[in-house]
Amino acid sequence: MLIFKNSLYNRQEGSSNRNTPISNMGFHELFDPCNLLSVALEEEIEVISFLKRQPIEYWPQDLKKFYQTAYKMGSYTIFSNLLSILKSGLNDVGAWHKMNTYHFCFLYDLLLRFSFNYNHDNEKGRLDTLPELKGTPLKIESFIKDYFFNTVFLLNEDQYNSLTREKKVELGYDCPFQFAVINGLTPTKEEMELQSSSDYPYSIYV
Image 1: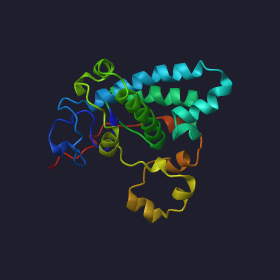
Image 2: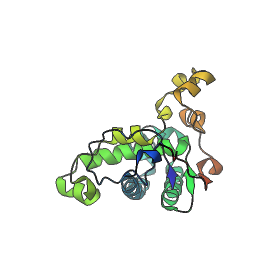
Image 3: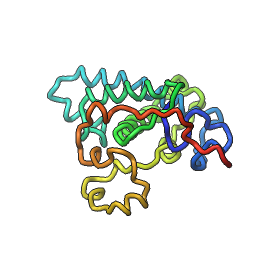
Image 4: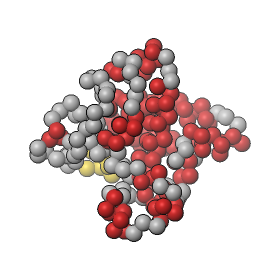
């Protein structure tokens, strides 16, 4: 199971299982954030497969178009690996898995694109994709706010590198490898892996 700011797996349980309050997302009461991520990751398999079939001379341009933030850090091979790792972590009910900035940056790009495509689809397409939303729009900005710890990866190099260590701590910018992602460093195999834990990551107190 993947660790977000709030649990994907028990949104309908009490507030004692949340690190921060869930905002008024305007979703249907049966909205399932875990299913949203599962469907988005599954669709990304087809997206990457499609992109890899394009002429290689178009790859740099397509990377910037489809991964407007993450393109600096990788290639289709890296994104395929991240996708596989995230899918496995999401469905592994035997342990909790901590993500780093590489994972969050990749997820951010694919979720924004998934949301854009969903919201511009017809009613039947929406119902087929996320039936629990009853055809209503997907407010991905609210999802990002509720489940991402931060979006530090949206800063450019100058903005991030000018921050002092104290300011980064104050802003909550403490996710591993954020410097590497913002400065466009390609992840190693180890940096793409999730960090597993058997401990429950959320507060059990009201």
